[in-house]
Amino acid sequence: MRSGDIVELEVASIGARGDGIAERDGARVFLPFTVPGDRVRVRLGATRGGGLAGDVNELLSEGPGRRMPDCRHFGTCGGCALQHVDAAVYGEWKRDLIVTALHHRGFRDVPVEPCIVSPPGARRRVTLSAVRVKADMLLGFHERGSTHVVDLAECPVTSPALVAAIAPIRSALGPLGLGKADIALLETETGIDMVLETKGVANLRRREILADLAAQADFARVTWSRPTPPGVPRERDLIVMRRPPVLRFGDVAVTPPPDAFVQATADAEHVMQSFVAEALKGEKQVADLFAGCGTFTFPLATGAKVASVDGDADLIHAAQEAANHAKGLKAVDFQTRDLFRRPLMGDELKSFSGVVFDPPRQGAKAQAEMLAASHVPVIVGVSCDPGTFARDARILVDGGYRLVRVQPIDQFLWSPHIELVGEFRRE
Image (cartoon, rainbow, N blue to C red; front, side, top):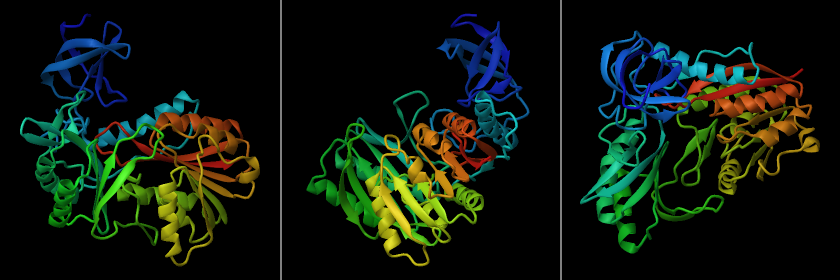
Protein backbone atom coordinates (compact mmCIF):
# COMPACT_ATOMS: atom_id res chain seq x y z
CA MET A 1 0.00 0.00 0.00
CA ARG A 2 1.68 3.18 -1.24
CA SER A 3 0.89 6.86 -1.65
CA GLY A 4 -1.00 7.35 -4.91
CA ASP A 5 -2.69 3.93 -4.89
CA ILE A 6 -6.46 3.85 -5.42
CA VAL A 7 -8.21 1.36 -3.13
CA GLU A 8 -11.67 0.53 -1.80
CA LEU A 9 -12.06 0.69 1.97
CA GLU A 10 -14.74 0.47 4.65
CA VAL A 11 -14.58 3.00 7.49
CA ALA A 12 -14.44 1.33 10.90
CA SER A 13 -14.31 4.22 13.37
CA ILE A 14 -13.78 7.95 13.88
CA GLY A 15 -10.38 9.09 15.11
CA ALA A 16 -9.47 11.73 17.68
CA ARG A 17 -9.24 14.47 15.03
CA GLY A 18 -12.65 13.67 13.57
CA ASP A 19 -11.51 11.74 10.48
CA GLY A 20 -12.85 8.30 9.66
CA ILE A 21 -10.35 5.45 10.05
CA ALA A 22 -10.14 2.38 7.83
CA GLU A 23 -7.52 -0.35 7.83
CA ARG A 24 -5.69 -2.09 5.00
CA ASP A 25 -2.68 -4.38 5.18
CA GLY A 26 -2.41 -3.69 8.90
CA ALA A 27 -2.09 0.07 8.44
CA ARG A 28 -4.59 2.80 9.24
CA VAL A 29 -5.95 5.15 6.59
CA PHE A 30 -7.39 8.50 7.72
CA LEU A 31 -10.39 9.66 5.69
CA PRO A 32 -11.97 13.07 6.35
CA PHE A 33 -15.75 13.52 6.24
CA THR A 34 -16.56 9.82 6.53
CA VAL A 35 -18.54 7.82 9.10
CA PRO A 36 -18.30 4.21 10.31
CA GLY A 37 -19.84 1.90 7.72
CA ASP A 38 -19.05 4.13 4.72
CA ARG A 39 -17.69 2.19 1.75
CA VAL A 40 -15.37 4.47 -0.23
CA ARG A 41 -12.94 4.56 -3.14
CA VAL A 42 -9.83 6.35 -1.94
CA ARG A 43 -6.58 7.75 -3.28
CA LEU A 44 -3.87 7.19 -0.69
CA GLY A 45 -1.76 10.17 0.31
CA ALA A 46 1.11 11.11 2.59
CA THR A 47 2.22 9.31 5.74
CA ARG A 48 0.32 10.41 8.83
CA GLY A 49 0.27 9.17 12.44
CA GLY A 50 1.60 5.70 11.73
CA GLY A 51 -0.67 5.31 8.71
CA LEU A 52 -1.63 7.18 5.56
CA ALA A 53 -3.91 10.08 4.79
CA GLY A 54 -6.51 9.43 2.11
CA ASP A 55 -8.74 11.43 -0.20
CA VAL A 56 -12.21 10.05 -0.91
CA ASN A 57 -12.80 9.91 -4.66
CA GLU A 58 -16.21 8.22 -4.42
CA LEU A 59 -18.70 7.31 -1.73
CA LEU A 60 -19.82 3.82 -2.79
CA SER A 61 -22.30 3.27 0.05
CA GLU A 62 -23.23 5.22 3.15
CA GLY A 63 -22.79 4.18 6.75
CA PRO A 64 -25.80 4.42 9.12
CA GLY A 65 -24.48 7.45 11.03
CA ARG A 66 -24.39 9.92 8.13
CA ARG A 67 -26.48 13.11 7.85
CA MET A 68 -26.65 16.16 5.61
CA PRO A 69 -24.31 18.97 6.76
CA ASP A 70 -25.90 22.24 7.83
CA CYS A 71 -23.44 24.66 6.19
CA ARG A 72 -22.50 25.42 2.59
CA HIS A 73 -18.86 25.86 3.65
CA PHE A 74 -18.54 22.42 5.23
CA GLY A 75 -15.72 20.41 3.72
CA THR A 76 -13.66 23.50 2.93
CA CYS A 77 -13.86 25.57 6.11
CA GLY A 78 -11.60 24.22 8.85
CA GLY A 79 -13.96 25.26 11.62
CA CYS A 80 -16.01 22.03 11.52
CA ALA A 81 -14.97 18.43 10.99
CA LEU A 82 -18.15 16.49 11.84
CA GLN A 83 -21.30 18.17 10.51
CA HIS A 84 -21.93 15.02 8.45
CA VAL A 85 -22.27 12.78 11.55
CA ASP A 86 -25.71 12.22 13.08
CA ALA A 87 -26.40 13.29 16.66
CA ALA A 88 -26.32 9.84 18.30
CA VAL A 89 -23.02 8.75 16.74
CA TYR A 90 -21.53 12.20 17.30
CA GLY A 91 -22.45 12.41 21.01
CA GLU A 92 -21.14 8.94 21.75
CA TRP A 93 -17.90 9.67 19.88
CA LYS A 94 -17.34 12.82 21.94
CA ARG A 95 -17.92 10.87 25.16
CA ASP A 96 -15.51 8.17 23.96
CA LEU A 97 -12.75 10.77 23.59
CA ILE A 98 -12.87 11.15 27.37
CA VAL A 99 -13.32 7.45 28.12
CA THR A 100 -10.29 6.62 25.96
CA ALA A 101 -8.11 9.28 27.59
CA LEU A 102 -9.07 7.98 31.05
CA HIS A 103 -8.37 4.37 30.01
CA HIS A 104 -4.86 5.37 28.92
CA ARG A 105 -4.23 6.52 32.49
CA GLY A 106 -5.65 3.36 34.07
CA PHE A 107 -9.20 4.52 34.83
CA ARG A 108 -11.61 1.72 33.92
CA ASP A 109 -14.68 2.15 36.10
CA VAL A 110 -15.27 5.91 36.37
CA PRO A 111 -18.89 6.89 35.62
CA VAL A 112 -18.72 9.06 32.49
CA GLU A 113 -22.12 10.60 31.84
CA PRO A 114 -23.68 11.05 28.36
CA CYS A 115 -22.35 14.10 26.58
CA ILE A 116 -24.34 17.34 26.91
CA VAL A 117 -24.14 19.11 23.54
CA SER A 118 -24.61 22.85 23.03
CA PRO A 119 -27.11 23.55 20.24
CA PRO A 120 -26.32 25.16 16.88
CA GLY A 121 -26.10 28.95 16.96
CA ALA A 122 -24.90 29.01 20.58
CA ARG A 123 -21.23 29.92 20.09
CA ARG A 124 -20.78 33.38 21.63
CA ARG A 125 -17.00 33.71 21.20
CA VAL A 126 -15.13 33.34 17.89
CA THR A 127 -11.90 34.55 16.31
CA LEU A 128 -12.02 35.20 12.57
CA SER A 129 -9.12 35.72 10.18
CA ALA A 130 -9.08 38.57 7.67
CA VAL A 131 -6.77 38.71 4.66
CA ARG A 132 -6.56 40.92 1.60
CA VAL A 133 -6.71 39.10 -1.75
CA LYS A 134 -6.21 41.62 -4.55
CA ALA A 135 -8.93 44.23 -4.00
CA ASP A 136 -11.07 42.13 -1.67
CA MET A 137 -10.93 41.39 2.05
CA LEU A 138 -11.81 37.82 3.00
CA LEU A 139 -13.17 37.26 6.50
CA GLY A 140 -13.77 33.86 8.02
CA PHE A 141 -12.01 30.72 9.21
CA HIS A 142 -8.99 29.04 7.65
CA GLU A 143 -9.51 26.22 5.22
CA ARG A 144 -8.81 22.75 6.52
CA GLY A 145 -5.02 22.25 6.65
CA SER A 146 -4.32 25.56 4.96
CA THR A 147 -3.58 29.22 5.58
CA HIS A 148 -6.23 30.23 3.03
CA VAL A 149 -9.31 31.93 4.46
CA VAL A 150 -12.88 30.87 3.68
CA ASP A 151 -14.96 34.02 3.18
CA LEU A 152 -17.93 33.23 5.42
CA ALA A 153 -21.48 33.70 4.21
CA GLU A 154 -22.98 31.70 7.08
CA CYS A 155 -22.00 29.73 10.19
CA PRO A 156 -24.59 27.51 11.90
CA VAL A 157 -22.33 27.03 14.93
CA THR A 158 -22.03 30.72 15.76
CA SER A 159 -24.68 32.93 17.35
CA PRO A 160 -26.88 34.86 14.89
CA ALA A 161 -25.68 38.17 16.35
CA LEU A 162 -22.05 37.37 15.57
CA VAL A 163 -22.90 36.07 12.10
CA ALA A 164 -24.81 39.28 11.38
CA ALA A 165 -21.71 41.27 12.36
CA ILE A 166 -19.53 39.66 9.68
CA ALA A 167 -20.83 41.69 6.74
CA PRO A 168 -20.35 45.17 8.29
CA ILE A 169 -16.91 44.16 9.61
CA ARG A 170 -15.88 42.95 6.16
CA SER A 171 -17.05 46.24 4.62
CA ALA A 172 -15.00 48.23 7.13
CA LEU A 173 -11.84 46.18 6.67
CA GLY A 174 -11.24 47.34 3.11
CA PRO A 175 -10.85 51.07 3.92
CA LEU A 176 -8.61 50.20 6.89
CA GLY A 177 -5.88 49.24 4.42
CA LEU A 178 -4.70 46.14 6.28
CA GLY A 179 -3.01 43.13 4.71
CA LYS A 180 -4.29 40.74 7.35
CA ALA A 181 -5.75 40.75 10.84
CA ASP A 182 -7.49 38.58 13.41
CA ILE A 183 -10.93 39.63 14.64
CA ALA A 184 -12.06 38.36 18.05
CA LEU A 185 -15.79 38.72 18.74
CA LEU A 186 -17.63 38.14 22.00
CA GLU A 187 -21.40 38.43 22.32
CA THR A 188 -22.32 40.00 25.67
CA GLU A 189 -25.54 41.17 27.32
CA THR A 190 -24.91 44.72 26.14
CA GLY A 191 -23.60 44.04 22.65
CA ILE A 192 -20.62 42.69 20.77
CA ASP A 193 -17.10 43.23 22.07
CA MET A 194 -14.65 43.31 19.14
CA VAL A 195 -10.85 43.15 19.21
CA LEU A 196 -8.91 43.70 15.98
CA GLU A 197 -5.36 42.35 16.19
CA THR A 198 -2.85 43.38 13.53
CA LYS A 199 0.69 44.69 13.15
CA GLY A 200 -0.61 48.00 11.84
CA VAL A 201 -1.00 51.27 13.71
CA ALA A 202 -4.35 52.71 14.81
CA ASN A 203 -4.01 56.12 13.14
CA LEU A 204 -6.76 58.74 13.14
CA ARG A 205 -8.36 57.53 9.90
CA ARG A 206 -8.55 53.94 11.12
CA ARG A 207 -10.02 55.04 14.43
CA GLU A 208 -12.75 56.94 12.60
CA ILE A 209 -13.59 53.93 10.42
CA LEU A 210 -13.84 51.61 13.44
CA ALA A 211 -15.88 54.12 15.43
CA ASP A 212 -18.30 54.34 12.49
CA LEU A 213 -18.44 50.52 12.37
CA ALA A 214 -19.28 50.36 16.09
CA ALA A 215 -22.10 52.86 15.64
CA GLN A 216 -23.48 51.19 12.51
CA ALA A 217 -23.39 47.65 13.94
CA ASP A 218 -24.23 48.76 17.51
CA PHE A 219 -21.10 47.18 19.02
CA ALA A 220 -20.45 47.74 22.71
CA ARG A 221 -16.68 48.11 22.48
CA VAL A 222 -13.93 48.03 19.84
CA THR A 223 -10.26 47.58 20.71
CA TRP A 224 -7.12 47.66 18.55
CA SER A 225 -4.46 45.12 19.57
CA ARG A 226 -0.91 44.51 18.41
CA PRO A 227 0.58 40.98 18.57
CA THR A 228 3.40 40.45 21.05
CA PRO A 229 5.78 37.55 21.76
CA PRO A 230 4.54 34.79 24.10
CA GLY A 231 4.58 35.86 27.71
CA VAL A 232 4.56 39.56 26.89
CA PRO A 233 1.31 41.48 27.60
CA ARG A 234 -0.56 42.52 24.48
CA GLU A 235 -0.48 46.12 23.40
CA ARG A 236 -4.12 47.24 23.38
CA ASP A 237 -5.66 50.55 22.37
CA LEU A 238 -9.31 51.29 23.12
CA ILE A 239 -10.94 52.71 19.99
CA VAL A 240 -14.45 53.23 21.32
CA MET A 241 -16.62 51.99 24.19
CA ARG A 242 -20.21 52.93 23.52
CA ARG A 243 -21.20 51.01 26.66
CA PRO A 244 -19.37 48.45 28.81
CA PRO A 245 -19.70 44.87 27.54
CA VAL A 246 -21.26 42.76 30.30
CA LEU A 247 -21.28 39.07 31.15
CA ARG A 248 -23.18 37.79 34.16
CA PHE A 249 -21.77 35.07 36.42
CA GLY A 250 -24.50 34.18 38.89
CA ASP A 251 -26.00 37.56 39.72
CA VAL A 252 -22.77 39.50 39.24
CA ALA A 253 -22.26 41.68 36.14
CA VAL A 254 -18.66 41.58 34.92
CA THR A 255 -17.02 43.71 32.22
CA PRO A 256 -14.28 41.42 30.89
CA PRO A 257 -11.04 42.83 29.49
CA PRO A 258 -10.72 42.82 25.68
CA ASP A 259 -10.28 39.32 24.21
CA ALA A 260 -10.79 37.74 27.63
CA PHE A 261 -11.08 34.00 28.01
CA VAL A 262 -14.69 33.00 28.67
CA GLN A 263 -16.52 29.75 27.99
CA ALA A 264 -17.51 29.36 24.35
CA THR A 265 -21.25 28.97 24.99
CA ALA A 266 -23.48 30.17 27.79
CA ASP A 267 -25.25 26.76 27.80
CA ALA A 268 -22.01 24.93 28.59
CA GLU A 269 -21.06 27.52 31.18
CA HIS A 270 -24.34 26.99 33.05
CA VAL A 271 -23.84 23.19 33.05
CA MET A 272 -20.33 23.60 34.46
CA GLN A 273 -21.47 26.07 37.10
CA SER A 274 -24.24 23.69 38.21
CA PHE A 275 -21.81 20.75 38.41
CA VAL A 276 -19.32 22.78 40.47
CA ALA A 277 -22.05 24.12 42.78
CA GLU A 278 -23.43 20.62 43.40
CA ALA A 279 -20.02 19.09 44.08
CA LEU A 280 -18.98 21.90 46.46
CA LYS A 281 -22.37 22.32 48.14
CA GLY A 282 -21.97 23.12 51.83
CA GLU A 283 -18.23 23.87 51.62
CA LYS A 284 -17.50 27.19 53.33
CA GLN A 285 -13.89 27.85 52.29
CA VAL A 286 -13.25 27.37 48.56
CA ALA A 287 -10.34 28.10 46.23
CA ASP A 288 -11.13 28.88 42.57
CA LEU A 289 -7.86 28.32 40.71
CA PHE A 290 -7.32 29.59 37.14
CA ALA A 291 -10.43 31.60 37.97
CA GLY A 292 -10.54 33.94 34.98
CA CYS A 293 -12.92 36.81 35.61
CA GLY A 294 -15.26 34.92 37.92
CA THR A 295 -17.14 32.16 36.07
CA PHE A 296 -17.18 29.97 39.18
CA THR A 297 -16.06 32.49 41.78
CA PHE A 298 -19.26 34.50 41.89
CA PRO A 299 -21.81 31.65 41.97
CA LEU A 300 -19.76 30.01 44.75
CA ALA A 301 -19.35 33.26 46.69
CA THR A 302 -23.05 33.44 47.54
CA GLY A 303 -22.49 30.66 50.09
CA ALA A 304 -18.74 30.40 50.67
CA LYS A 305 -15.65 32.47 51.21
CA VAL A 306 -13.67 32.17 47.98
CA ALA A 307 -10.02 32.68 47.08
CA SER A 308 -10.09 33.59 43.37
CA VAL A 309 -6.67 33.07 41.79
CA ASP A 310 -5.45 33.58 38.22
CA GLY A 311 -2.21 34.51 36.49
CA ASP A 312 -3.84 37.15 34.28
CA ALA A 313 -3.92 40.44 36.17
CA ASP A 314 -6.50 41.94 33.78
CA LEU A 315 -8.96 39.12 34.46
CA ILE A 316 -8.52 39.39 38.21
CA HIS A 317 -8.92 43.18 38.06
CA ALA A 318 -12.18 42.82 36.09
CA ALA A 319 -13.53 40.33 38.64
CA GLN A 320 -12.52 42.53 41.57
CA GLU A 321 -14.18 45.57 40.01
CA ALA A 322 -17.37 43.55 39.57
CA ALA A 323 -17.24 42.35 43.18
CA ASN A 324 -16.92 45.94 44.40
CA HIS A 325 -20.37 46.67 42.96
CA ALA A 326 -22.06 43.36 43.79
CA LYS A 327 -24.37 42.52 46.66
CA GLY A 328 -24.95 39.32 48.58
CA LEU A 329 -21.44 37.88 48.28
CA LYS A 330 -19.32 36.35 51.01
CA ALA A 331 -15.72 37.55 51.27
CA VAL A 332 -13.70 37.03 48.06
CA ASP A 333 -9.89 37.18 48.12
CA PHE A 334 -8.62 38.03 44.61
CA GLN A 335 -5.04 37.05 43.85
CA THR A 336 -2.88 37.42 40.74
CA ARG A 337 -0.52 34.46 40.73
CA ASP A 338 1.17 32.23 38.13
CA LEU A 339 -0.13 28.84 39.22
CA PHE A 340 2.15 27.02 36.78
CA ARG A 341 5.26 28.39 38.48
CA ARG A 342 3.79 29.06 41.93
CA PRO A 343 0.98 26.61 42.67
CA LEU A 344 -0.81 26.85 46.00
CA MET A 345 1.27 24.81 48.44
CA GLY A 346 0.35 22.53 51.31
CA ASP A 347 0.16 25.16 54.05
CA GLU A 348 -1.92 27.43 51.81
CA LEU A 349 -4.36 24.63 50.96
CA LYS A 350 -5.03 23.69 54.60
CA SER A 351 -7.78 26.27 55.04
CA PHE A 352 -9.88 25.09 52.08
CA SER A 353 -12.62 22.48 52.20
CA GLY A 354 -13.12 22.64 48.43
CA VAL A 355 -11.13 23.54 45.32
CA VAL A 356 -12.10 24.02 41.67
CA PHE A 357 -9.42 24.35 39.02
CA ASP A 358 -9.97 25.24 35.35
CA PRO A 359 -6.57 25.47 33.65
CA PRO A 360 -5.73 26.07 29.98
CA ARG A 361 -5.25 23.18 27.60
CA GLN A 362 -1.86 22.20 29.05
CA GLY A 363 -3.51 21.24 32.33
CA ALA A 364 -2.30 21.90 35.86
CA LYS A 365 0.36 19.31 36.64
CA ALA A 366 2.21 21.34 39.28
CA GLN A 367 -1.01 22.34 41.06
CA ALA A 368 -2.37 18.79 40.86
CA GLU A 369 0.76 17.53 42.60
CA MET A 370 0.24 19.99 45.45
CA LEU A 371 -3.44 19.09 45.71
CA ALA A 372 -2.60 15.38 45.74
CA ALA A 373 -0.50 15.94 48.85
CA SER A 374 -3.21 18.01 50.55
CA HIS A 375 -6.22 17.08 52.63
CA VAL A 376 -8.82 19.14 50.76
CA PRO A 377 -12.00 17.01 50.96
CA VAL A 378 -13.50 17.88 47.54
CA ILE A 379 -11.85 18.95 44.28
CA VAL A 380 -13.48 19.74 40.94
CA GLY A 381 -11.42 19.72 37.76
CA VAL A 382 -12.58 21.50 34.61
CA SER A 383 -10.74 20.89 31.35
CA CYS A 384 -10.88 21.34 27.59
CA ASP A 385 -8.33 18.56 27.02
CA PRO A 386 -9.14 14.95 28.01
CA GLY A 387 -5.47 13.95 27.87
CA THR A 388 -4.15 16.51 30.34
CA PHE A 389 -7.23 16.07 32.54
CA ALA A 390 -6.55 12.32 32.71
CA ARG A 391 -2.89 12.99 33.57
CA ASP A 392 -3.84 15.38 36.39
CA ALA A 393 -6.56 12.99 37.57
CA ARG A 394 -3.98 10.20 37.81
CA ILE A 395 -1.84 12.43 40.04
CA LEU A 396 -4.80 13.18 42.33
CA VAL A 397 -5.97 9.56 42.55
CA ASP A 398 -2.45 8.30 43.22
CA GLY A 399 -2.40 10.84 46.06
CA GLY A 400 -5.50 9.35 47.69
CA TYR A 401 -8.47 10.88 45.86
CA ARG A 402 -11.27 9.05 44.09
CA LEU A 403 -12.60 10.27 40.75
CA VAL A 404 -16.32 10.11 41.48
CA ARG A 405 -17.88 11.15 38.17
CA VAL A 406 -17.15 12.92 34.89
CA GLN A 407 -19.50 15.03 32.79
CA PRO A 408 -18.61 15.60 29.11
CA ILE A 409 -19.82 18.97 27.77
CA ASP A 410 -19.62 19.77 24.08
CA GLN A 411 -19.43 23.51 23.56
CA PHE A 412 -17.27 23.08 20.44
CA LEU A 413 -20.00 21.80 18.15
CA TRP A 414 -18.89 19.63 15.19
CA SER A 415 -15.22 19.99 16.09
CA PRO A 416 -12.85 17.41 17.64
CA HIS A 417 -12.68 19.39 20.90
CA ILE A 418 -14.54 18.56 24.10
CA GLU A 419 -14.94 20.06 27.58
CA LEU A 420 -15.36 18.04 30.75
CA VAL A 421 -15.87 18.42 34.49
CA GLY A 422 -14.80 15.86 37.07
CA GLU A 423 -15.41 15.49 40.80
CA PHE A 424 -12.74 14.13 43.16
CA ARG A 425 -13.18 13.22 46.83
CA ARG A 426 -10.51 12.39 49.36
CA GLU A 427 -10.73 8.71 50.30
